[in-house]
Image (cartoon, rainbow, N blue to C red; front, side, top):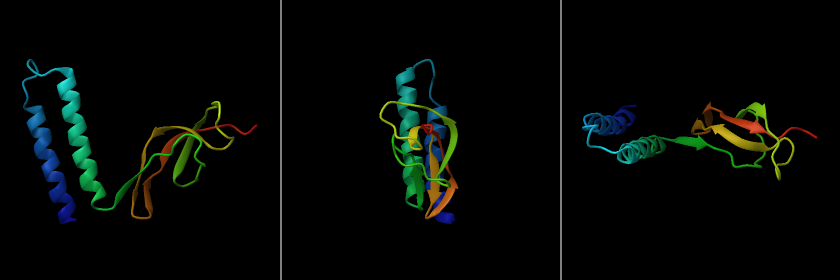
Length: 109
């Protein structure tokens, strides 16, 4: 757990630097770019400790437990019972699902 914490501490340092920026001089694009870099750094740190992302592609088979269907959505080219879109990514820790991906599923015909 200590190695996870030390990876996250670096991310906190970058968040603190971002929050200390003069908002009168930074553009929206610069701020968004900075947030993306910080997010990528956090994800890299978590992935080094076994955290994975569940983000099914359109028409991927719906897998209960890894995916949570929160709505039905019919889209051209999507087979019934398959993922139409991913609304929120899910996460794993090794083989264990921490949070299933929230998805829309094509309705059965």
